Length: 121
Image 1 (cartoon, rainbow, N blue to C red):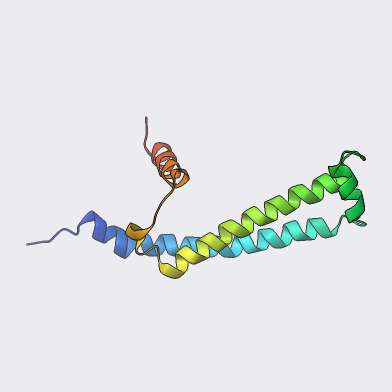
Image 2: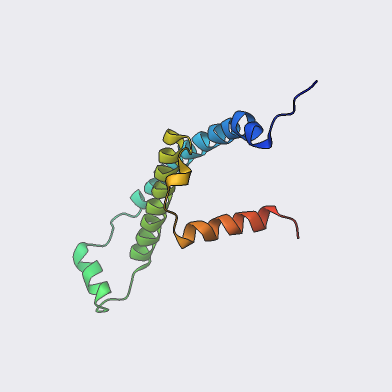
């Protein structure tokens, strides 16, 4: 008699290891993206001075293209670093003990959006 594996067992033994390997590679790739964004920032030379930025904030000076670009790049760097950090933390724990996590609405919204994207209409 052939015993069929439960779908959950298939997920744990076959699918999850593949996902973890893929996510490890993507976390490394995100680190490279941060380096590329930082390299782009380094090309802005000279950057605006802190005093100029303070005057832009007070609307005494218009926001310069350099300042805007630096800010956008910095926001992207922080976002990518946060994603990489979150991935690494989850990878370190193997996505275990998720039952004990206190999810927020944004987490449930993300789960629902993922399911909607993966479920054909």
